[in-house]
Image (tube, rainbow, N blue to C red; front, side, top):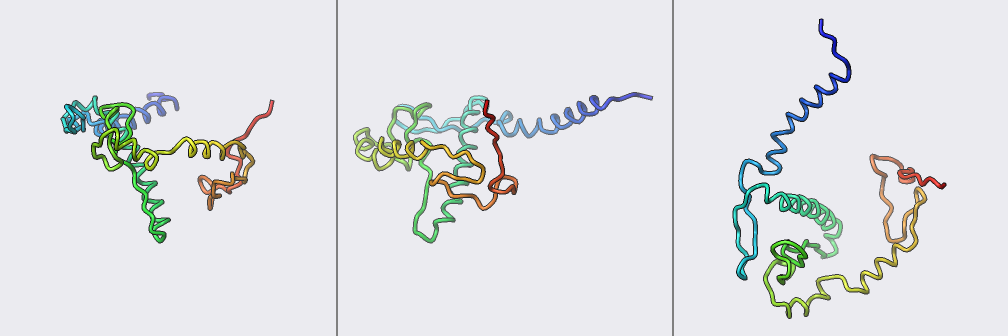
Length: 174
């Protein structure tokens, strides 16, 4: 008779779960096949195949963009009868890092001159006044359960169907 502790059972279950996820993880980060990546070289946008490990940042950014697109789609359903449509800008627009950094693109991803970008910058990006306004909204924190800042609509229900006045975070006063 073999004696097995609960710890051993837990470890075995964990190991089996990890093994089953290994194939999925390899798929998710693209270990098996090269990735196509947009690059900016010699004044042109080109596509090039790169090793999957070099494309991990791209895949993370794409997952983030898909998540954002889901939120935008939800907002578009909410405002559909108002004739308003929200759109995410191109991944090339207003980049601070990566292959498109320092190159000027409009929100649709078309290459433009710096002069044209500066001409439309206030239409496309928040101004200093916009940023100051947003900061002013957040000067008085609201931390009481069931209370919401004036610029936040109360949810229909709380997280995991909890009541909206559920105390999710407790502030311990010393």
